[in-house]
Length: 474
Length: 92
Picture 1 (cartoon, rainbow over the protein chains, first blue to last red):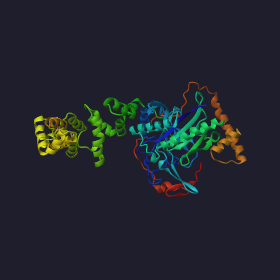
Picture 2: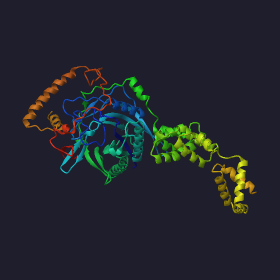
Picture 3: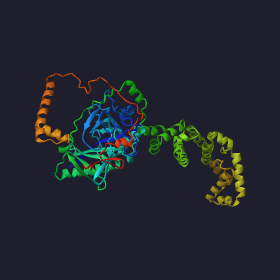
Picture 4: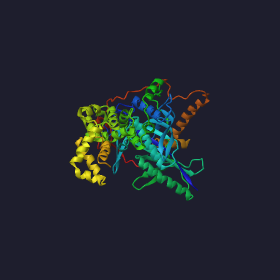
């Protein structure tokens, strides 16, 4: 019997805000332990949490980027459990009226585009960070109360690689939206993976196994690959699977049971009495909608369609949005956008790396790069001269046309002038000229080089080649 | 009923003597019976509400406010080390 995997992901993402979700403590990574804390995020008695408006805006924006609805009513609930990193003994979350619902993410997978449905993206709070010692554990509450968005997919993923690509696409979207820095090293993205397997053709889902708290996408891929194999193996040998939570041991490369359904948590959710519901107004939503940006995949597809760029070039401009914006201005009206892309990705990038600056620091407009490429394409200057002009642009900020005029760098395409250069080169180098007449093709390149040198790089190389051949009578 | 009480006791991480269990069990029963009265009401067509006060969008702007000093934050901790609250070893 053949089996198929069904995977759903719950991805927790820390929002990029200045302060925490319910209090004015700074939301920052790496501060001295227990310095960004106050009575609210320490769960001391008698305090009143107040939601961070920016976190709600970023949540709504995320919803829009994930094609979700943003309902006109959302509320907060308490999820009750005891754990040392959870100071209030409940976590504030959104149970039945989340801030965003029912969307989808599109991403490239295999040869095509896949779509994974999003069940919801709801707002909650992060917990403290524990450090474990031999006999004790220590808790730092700087992270407690940091706004945390939980993005829940429908069980639409069918394999470990697909889950991996979905996560990469999700991260790209969240980074594009400026919603989260998604820094995995800082634990800003964590993932719970729900996996079941079933015989192909069966509609009923198999027993769901959850792998908790994955903190790398490659880890998710490895764990899912292992877990799918394991579950199919159990069923093949006539065994049965039970609903349980498992832990991935990355060093050993196995999952192991943490708890089964019998001792599953009973969270006793109820509406939080301290927090009033959020009812986004049309104006509030319209303001956020106006800031919705083009998604990475859409941008890539548009760059390919509009500028006839190869996918790899488009990916460079999607990965570095500022460079991509720069390219689009530079390529405006360009006859050969690919040539402009090459200049931006190679020459400009190299120069920026050298100077350690960004496109925002340049003292010439993006359109100047387009102009420079236009001069090369139009035959006014050689690509070698263009390099010199480019260096000059960096230094003086002058337009390429001005530099070419001032320095007299225009390519010589006047056949009379070029003929004079050619004759000089032949007279000065009778040996190579004779060699060429005797059929040694390579000698022509030597003569051509002499002409280019004499013209200080300005001679039109193609015309020089033709003229030399004509004069030497071949 | 006894099972419900034991479940609640377990969730609340408390221990009860048999006397307490008997007393609290009967009190809890009384409370639940009282709340059962609500079932007599016909609430068809009544929207569930999370709050009695019709108030929404009580928000704050994302501006840093005052945090506690580290010393003040740790003052009531039974045990600290390396700036951390020390707790019994967490195992799961």
